[in-house]
Image 1: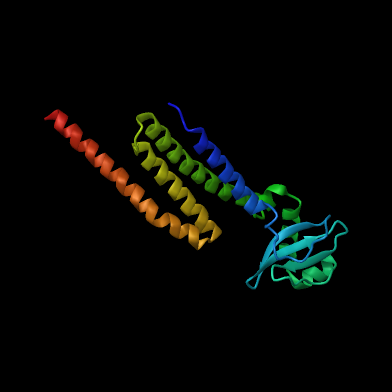
Image 2 (image 1 turned 45 degrees about the vertical axis):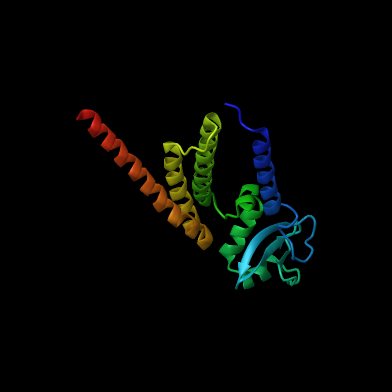
Length: 200
C-alpha cells in the first residue's frame, strides 16, 4: 500500500506549526520584556495571566499579558504576595524543562500528561489505520479498530481534560465517547446476529 507523500508532509508541517505556536515567539506575547537570563513560569492571578520572572540573581518580578509588571523584589517580598509553597513550586518548575513544557508543577502531574498523550496517540492511531486501509482499498473505509481506538482515546482525553479543568476539551470529548461506544455496540450486535445465522 502506498501512502501519499503530500499528506504525510502536510501532517508533519501542521504538527511543527502547532509546536511553534505553543512554544514559539507568541508564547510570551503581550508581556513586558523579561530579562534574557531569567526563567519564566506561567501564572494566573485573579484572572490575569502572565509569568513569574526568576532571575539568576534570585530576584523576582511578576509580568502580565496586559503589559503591566511589578518592581523587582526579593524572595522574602514575593512570599508576602504569594504563599511560600506556591513560590517553591514555581522555582521547582523553573528548573525543570519538562514542567515548563507541559505547564505542570510536579512529577505526579506527569502521570496525567501521560494519560493525555496516550489518548492523543490512540486518536492518531485510529486515523492512521483508517487512512492506510482506505488507501489500500482506494475508497473511504472505516475499519472496526477505528471505533475501539476512538473510544479508548476519547476516554483518556476526557480524563485528561477533566484533570486540566479544560471545559472546551471536556465538551469536545463527551459526545464523541458516546458515539464511539454506540458504534462498538452496533458492531458487536451485528457480529452476534451473523454468528446466530451461521449456526441456524
